[in-house]
Every structure is written in C-alpha cells, then in structure tokens.
Length: 339
Image (cartoon, rainbow, N blue to C red; front, side, top):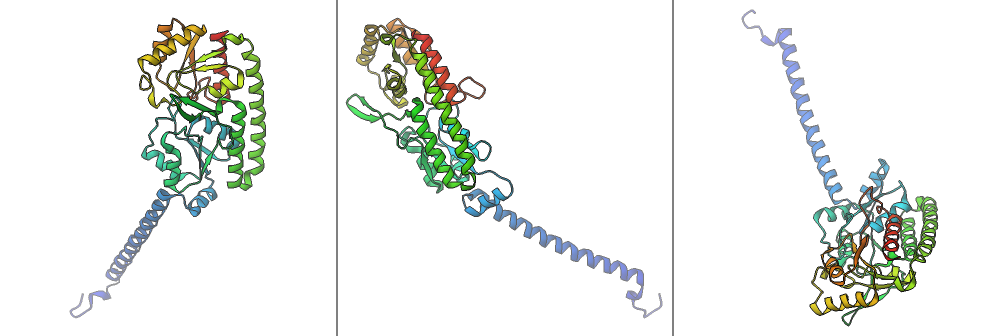
C-alpha cells in the first residue's frame, strides 16, 4: 500500500466491511422481528387465558376447534354427548363416583368454565351451595338447568321440606333433561340444529325403551317386597315411577352422611322399620360411604343386595359408564336382591 492511499480503496477490505454492515443490519432486523413475535404471542396467550371472547372462540372454530360444553355431573355429560356426537366437545366437572352435594370447585374447574361456551347443571340444588352456577357466573358464561320443567318431589326431613334433586332416576324426567339441553344447544349453534335434534330424537326413543324394560323387570318382584333401602334419598323418583317404597337413613343430601344426620334413636327406628317391613336386602351406593348402611344391615340382620349407581355414573369401561348402563345395572341389582 502506498503512503497516503486510503485503505478503503482496497476492494477486499471494502467487501468485508460491507458484509459486516449487512450482517449487523440483518441481525437488528431479526431482533426486531423476534420482539414483535414475542409481543404477539403474549397478546395471544392473554386472549387464550381469558378466552370467552367471541373473537377467540371464532378463531378456534375457524382453525377446526370444537366448541366446549361444560357439564356439572356425569349424567348431564352423558345426555349431552348423546346429543352432540362429535360436533362439540363435552367436558365434565365431576369424575365418576364423585358426590355433587359436597363437591368443592377447584381452580382447574374455573379454567374449564372460562373456556366453555355453555355450562349445564342439574339444578334443584343438587350441586351443593350452587357451585356450578357460581362457576358459570364468575366466568361470564350462560348456564342451562337441565331439570327445568320437572315436577319435583318434596321430602320431609325431620320436619324440614326440601326439593329432591335426583329427578333423572325417572327416564321420563331424563327425557325432559335431554329436551332442555337440545333446545339450548340448538339456540347456541344454529348450524348444528338438524344434527342435534336428530340425535336427540334417537336417544329419546332409547329412553322410552329403557322405561318399558324397567317396568317389565320390576314386575318380577312381588309388590310387598318392593321396598328399596339405600344410603340416602336418591331413589325417590325411581320409587314413585315403578311402585317401590323408599327408605333412606340420612335424607336426600349426603352432606350429613356417615352418622352426621343419624342419631341413636333414628338408627333404632330405621332398623326396626326394616325388620317390621320384612325387607330382604338393603343397598349401598357408589358415591356414598357405605359404612352406615352396612351397620344398619348388620343390626337388622339383612343382606347387602349390591351396590347402586346414584349421584354419579360408573367409571369408564364399567357397565355403568352411561346413563342407560347405570339404570340397567341398578335395576338388575335391585330385582336380583328383592325378588
């Protein structure tokens, strides 16, 4: 290089400097793009967490996602699945065997409510302290009461009149549930109306067949022996529908189970009643602690006729994993124990 010659005149050096400048510019541009991307992801994450907005749900549907229907109990979830098929996603708060009377919602339940389009409950105060209605209200979601329109039975528990919430134990009432759920889902999803109503029509026919089959089965039991003793008053609608007398030691809610609502005098009264009526067998329930009813059976000298599905259906892959399955298995157990 000659003295006084500008080093930038060297082509090789010029090229290297230029490449460094370009690389630096591209690096800065990439960093800016990364920042924009991260900011965009943050906004999308916030929108997803908050969900519930119509725009987010619409985006999910546009991407092939299904609307979510959140149900309180396993029975309600099963009715809903029979109506929606694969067109909507059905989620359930309660697991098989869980007790709706005493259930306490969790943060995960609140998250599911936030993601749902509609929440569906049994109603009639089955969900203790109205926990399902509270979840829906806090999430700003509409709630459907499946038991609306059912003629409720009243119970006299130590002079206190309460409404019996276990209405689904009559298939005729289950049909009311199905119609209410279908109507609400059709209103929320007009494009699915025909398919929802078509599935509901078939399921209603299955419920009518179930009712006819139960009537045939209970005729096997002599009328004087149609006395149903269970852990709590979950079977009154079944008893009224099919001509049973129903006895339960702890009232309609399990909130006072395992002795909480059982005084020594009441215990003696229940035992004496079982003996006087000539009850052949008593029944435990899947969602209620069996300790009390087993003590009563032992004291009265009667057999345990079997285990009945009551406030919850059975676990997946069990014979009672559906509403029709649980009713079928209950009837077989009851008839087998009392005939």
